[in-house]
Image (cartoon, rainbow, N blue to C red; front, side, top):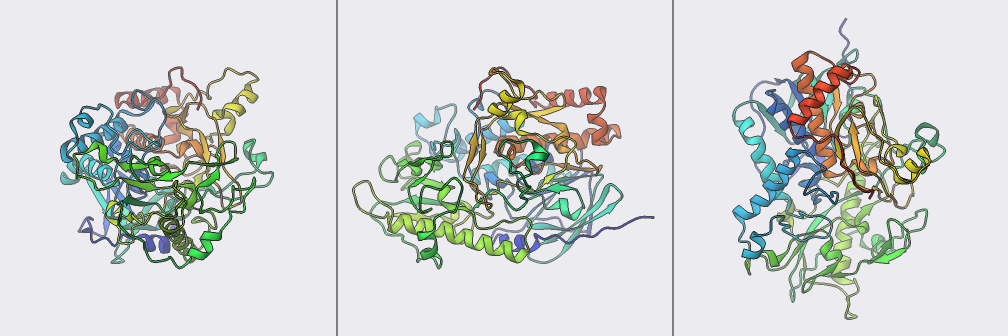
Length: 562
């Protein structure tokens, strides 16, 4: 007998709070309450977009949902320029990800009055930010992603439901039969029916709805063997999130915002972390992520700029014809606005809303502090010419549409990536030698590279930032242990709290999503289940050949650790 399991999602209130109010027209499919497709993708971030493109290019129909009115996840709605490895311009990523990056550069060449010198730069960095080789405005990535998906939407192969949140899931045995999503403004509901369902949400929202086994926070050392894990599991010990914002600097002007309601609290707040933080959070001094000793990057938005101003600058006036930008523009995703006082997972919608509201107050307090109290190199205080840029992030309050999420619910997977698989020192210890590479996974479906970079956590941990080895993405990490037709397509794959620190970045999330989309298409083509692909050498080889045809790199050349 058919069994129906309807589980209400604890994130609905959170989704409602985050619905965009920027006056952008809502785009979603009209017609029947039930939408059938070959693949249903819940979440329109980088993993979701990559998964959708992979399935669409394989000839499959797709329905994809997105909480906000912008697809693109951390690259757009969360306003975070891409964090990437040192070889990204040459190798170490998917062909489709390289195409996205080229598209962003071409967008600037087509639409912006670049100087002749900037136009001639092959690897144009619009903002010349220090964190990335392609620091750019969120809308540039949004435009390119929209353009990539547009032909499929116009042809009816893709149905895109913006401002929709998952609220229920219907399961039968070990299969997800349908997912109900709700429009955040009208309350209208649609039922998505597909042979394969991909969870590409930022927080793994589909997992509890569909009864998929998952883990949160820090696992116990006895479970993972990760050297930095605690003796007892800490499911509520999760990485901080950040409410990012864009600002520019206009010398000689006064754009000081109203004093935020919680400014007094945040001005005096000292994070309670172990090892200890460097002092007050609102300061130009912070803990060095690697040594944990105090350090200062400085801050000066005037002239050529320096320090934190250059860190995530997305518009360098020097790249453009004079007058295009009155001042440079930078995105603020700094340690100073990481929110540590609560989580968005494992709490009630009301508590999640409270934490986001306080996270926004922290970010606004940081801006106000920079405008009024931050020390200047000349001995003065405050930079009144700093101006919030709501138009850059597409909101009315000037803060990104969605918090920058570093840690999600994670599936109990067929295979879980541990620190001993990718961490430099852990690998050396496990193998008993100095010259090591990351674990070679026979079921590799992609590659990535980044330090194991854990920001301070709600459980009181300071940075955990250690060297890692260029790694592979194992297919087993995308497949739940029990459920047959749900595939992880974002940061919710089988990694630990520690290894999440290097698997959570932009190109890796894209690779996870593309592998998930291609896996769903491959399974439909051959009438297989995902674990049957992984557990047969012949089938796995055939799937990896399909990946190679699509320009997916699954192995690294000889490179060094980060």
